[in-house]
Every structure is written in structure tokens, then in C-alpha cells.
Image (cartoon, rainbow, N blue to C red; front, top):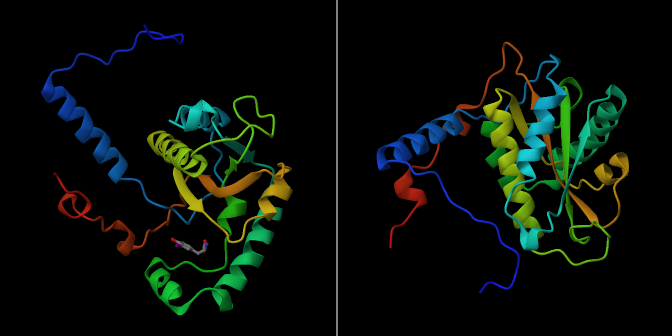
Amino acid sequence: MRDHDTLPYSTPALADGERVARALRMRDRLKQRRSCRYFSDAPVPRKVIEAAIEAAGTAPNGANHQPWHFAVVSSADMKRRIREAAEEEERAFYSGKASDEWLDALAPLGTDAEKPFLETAPWLIVVFAQRKGGFDEDGETQNYYVNESVGIACGMLIATLHEAGLATLTHTPSPMGFLREICGRPAHEKPVMIVVAGLPTEDATVPVKATRKKPLSQISSWL
Ligand code: IYR
């Protein structure tokens, strides 16, 4: 006997062909995702963001403590503060802190210290990892596999926003402690990334370099 409470679990009964078709459909949808750096100020319903965060909140995670918090920023004032603080860090990064090797790696992506999208995009989702807190967020209970859990949740968040037809960007100013202060989060939470969400400008482009994906034969081995 299992000595904990349980519920039945099953997966849908599908023909193999349908399983393959669904996997290919999902793959093809996800293949269309791009990191976008040109956001319009067109509004996007709050409900989309709420649903995507609920989807992220279903991610597999350590001991079901769900060690994440999503601070959703939409006010012009807060977005401006985040942009100003992020650009200050990025200026230091691009004009000295980053190694030449790192800057060379970024050159084909065309990134620089200017982050206007932090103000123009309708939504900034600031993702925090809770180092402690447990399910009840008591701030003390140990959490487990925090980075892994939050990473998976971010992937599910981005996939859902993409499925809703939004453009996204994972933005990781470094260091990003300022996000804790601006968003009013406690010291045991670590800012992980900003997921910028909205619609692309009409003349948005993406770097060709970013569209090259490693083939299956390179990213997998079958043992
Ligand atoms: N955080 C910087 C630099 C940057 C670093 C990597 I690695 C990227 O893939 C993209 C950017 C910035 O946002 O510009």
C-alpha cells in the first residue's frame, strides 16, 4: 500500500501516429519562437499574462515547494525605473566588464546597452527564485532544486506566451539585485530574469545567427 494520499493518473489513449503528429506540431510551433528586441506599445490582455503564469506555476519542481514568484510590471513609472537601472548595469557590462570573448559572441546578435523595450513592451514579468520558504512561503523552510525548478517554469511561461501569439525576450541584466528592490521582494528571493512580453513592432527583425539551431544528431545521443 502507498502510505500517502493519492489520486488516479492516466494519459490519453492515442494512436502512435497521433502521438507523433502532436509532437511534431508542438516542435514546429516552438521552432517559430524568437527572442524579440523590438516591441511595440500595443496592449495585450492581462488575462494572457495571468494564464501564462498559471501555466508556469504547474512546472515540475523540488518537493512541490514551487519556489518561484512572478512580479508583473506594467506601469510606465516602474518600467522606466527598471529600464534606467538595467541600462546602467548594461553600460558597465558593454564598456569594460564583459570579456572580449563574450562581446565577440554577442556581436552577431546586435545587442547593446540600450534597452528601450523595457519601457515600450506592455508587460515585464520579473521572475524570482525563492531560496527558502516551502509551499507556505514562510521564508524559512528549505527549498530544493531551486534553479532547475525556476528554469523549467520560465520555459513553460515563455512557451505559453508564444502559443498566445506574443513576442518575448528573456532579459538578464547583470547584476540584477536592483530588481528585488524595485519589485519590493524579500532578501531570500533571487531575481532570475525579466521575461519581456508584448507584440513586435512592424519592422522588427531577428538576427540570422539566432535562427540556426543545432540538429538532433548534434544535441542527442541514443544509447
Ligand atoms: N545582459 C546583456 C548581455 C547579453 C548576454 C547574453 I549571454 C545574451 O545572450 C544577450 C545579451 C544584454 O541584455 O544586453
